[in-house]
Length: 144
Image (cartoon, rainbow, N blue to C red; front, side, top):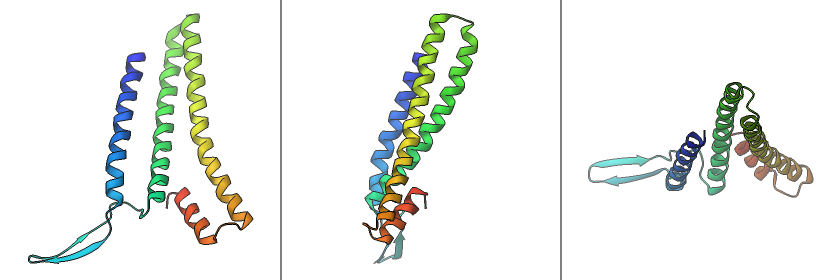
């Protein structure tokens, strides 16, 4: 089990590093039109965002979906291991720890999204922030 999880962690870390390298470079691309001897070409922004804040918000959203998907797969795997443990008390204690860590991880990921919504709603209700900024944050939180 430890070999599978360590390999999975290496793959997940590699994907995150790749995203960290590719996304900032892509976010800089804006729609521009230039004329050359061969004609006109247009460079399109491949992302839906035009700011670093929007990029971070999209990254957090993608990360939360990946983390929850990973947690569901781990829950299925740990559940299968519970069945295969066949009453081995040492193995069952180890699996209970894994189950606890998975539930805590999902709670942290979901809690982060809830905290973002609470902050947005609090700032909106207090009137301390411009309403356009609140609407922009609300759209980003909803993935639009």
